[in-house]
Image (tube, rainbow over all chains, first blue to last red):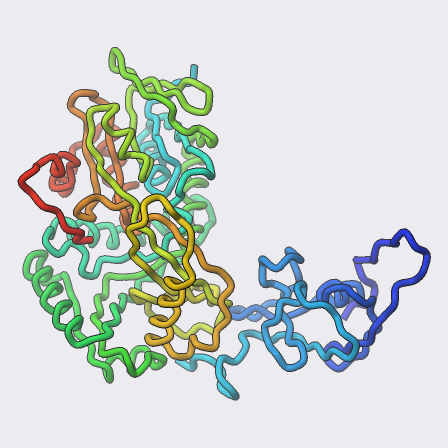
Length: 113
Length: 375
C-alpha cells in the first residue's frame, strides 16, 4: 500500500487544523480527517486499491466519487459492497478491501454453477 | 448545402446499422440524429438476441429473426476486427421461464406451430422443473419449467451501439447530432431535409427514427403507425457469474450485472419509472431466482418500445417518392445483423430481399384486418 497520497485536502478559510478520527483499514490503524467520505479518507491516506472486480478480480479504485460508478466498494463494519464515496467516516470504523463478489447468502457465495 | 448519397434520419441502433451497411456498399452516408430529447430506445433495451417464439402467426418473422441470429457471429466478428470492441455476443441458447403449467402448454403449442411452419431446424425443448434445475441450479421452486431454444443469446447493447458508430465512422459515415428533422421535401429525385437549422440533401432517404417514423413516413408517401410501449428494468450490483443462459426475465452480463425485466405498459410517451411496476418486476425476478432477494439494485430505468400494431417490423420503399425507405422495428438488437447485411444493401441499390415482403407498412392500411401483437 502506497503511503504518499496523490490527494491532499484543500486548506479551508480557517487556519484551525481539521479534527481527525481513527479508522481501521485491513487491520491497519489510520488517522483521517473528520467529516469526509470513506473514499476520500482512504485516498488521502494513500490507499490505492479498494477492491477487486467481480469477474476478473482485477484491482479497482474510486472513479466518480459521487455514487454513480460503483468502483469504490469496500466492506464497512462487516457489511459488504458499501459505496465508500457515499459513507462518512466515523471514529472506530472498521473497513476492509472488498474481494470479488460479496456473498449473497450467509456463508455461501452466490452461484457455484 | 450538405450533400450525400443517403440521408438516414435516426441515429439509434437501426439507423446506425443501416448507415454502416450502406457505407460498406459504397454510399456516402449522413446520419441525422435528433438529440437527447429523443426517446432513445437503443439506450434502454434488454440486449437479447432472441428468436424463441417470435413470429407466432407470421412465420416469416420467425425466419427473419432466425436468419439475423445466425448472422450475428459474423457481425460481431466484423465489429471486433474493425473497431476492437467486443460486443460480448453469447449465444448459448435461451430459456423462457414459465410460472404456470398453462403457460408451458401455450408455449409448447406455439413453438410446435413455429417448428412446423419454419422447419425442423427451428429447434426447441420443453424443460420440466427438474431438467431446468440441472441447467440452471439457482432457479426457484415456483418456476414450473422453461422452454429452451438453442438459437437465442444476448449481447451488450451499449457496446453494440458504440461499435456500430465506430465502424460506420471508419466507413465514412457522418453522424450529425442535434439534428431533429424539421421538414422533408422532395423534388427532381432529391430529398431535402431541414434539420438542426441546416439543409441536407441526398437522392436517397431512410427513415429510421423509431417512434418519430409515425409522423415522418407520410411526408414521403409511406405509412408506419408505430406506437410506444413502455418497459421498465432493474439493474443489480455486479454478482459472481451464475447464470449461463439468458432468460426472458433475467440475464447476467459479462461483467456480472444482473438485468431484471420487464414490463409492458401502454402509457403513451411517458418514459418514467413507477415503484409499483418495479416492485412487481423485482418480485418476479426473485421468484425466478430467489438468490436475487439479497442482491443490491443499483439502477432502474424505463424505455419506450417502438411497436407496430402487429409487433413486426416495417420495411418499405416509397412508390410516390422513389428513393425513400422506412426501416423500423422493436428488435434493433436481434435484427442488427439483418439490417447491416440485408436491408442496407437493398437500400443501396441491391435486390429486394424476398424475406421482407410481409413487412410492408401498407399492411396496416387494410381496414378489414385486426392486428394483435405477435412479437
